[in-house]
Length: 170
Image (cartoon, rainbow, N blue to C red; front, side, top):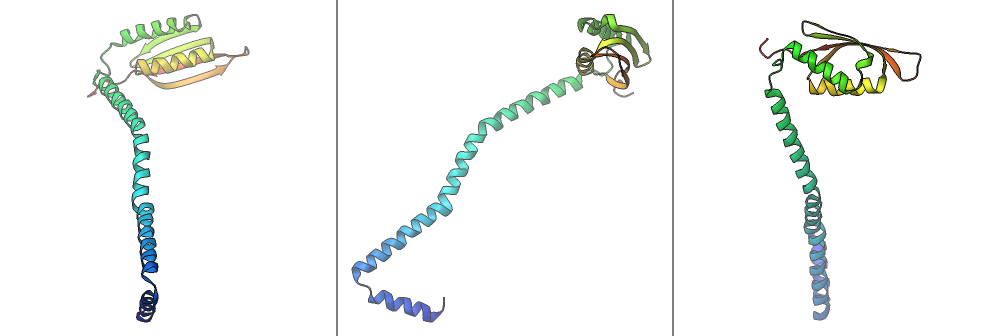
């Protein structure tokens, strides 16, 4: 503002009666309080309320992350190759039998760290569920797989190579 504008405002102020000056001062004070509320207090209050709403979800996520980290630590501390290959082969045979896939298994052989499996006319969904569970639980890696669709709906023939994890330090 220029000095002439300020002088003009001061002159107008002097021309107001005492009652009008109190009304203008009260209005300015009210405007200042509303502006302070809208610009300073209300955004902070709303952000605080929003954060309080998010806090339980964030704590639940943290608990889940901690549980997953503990599980990962537990799994990584287990020796990768602690089971003998023959023990792993027995575990594979048990998991195949428990999944109901034993009648379809035509070959299960061990060659070093690779398990060679052949399934003939196996239900695809059951085999896939078994493979997912077995690779996670036994910590095996799919090295090679060939799936061939059979004429009957939902049946496949599978050639699968699963690799045992290497022992740490090897």
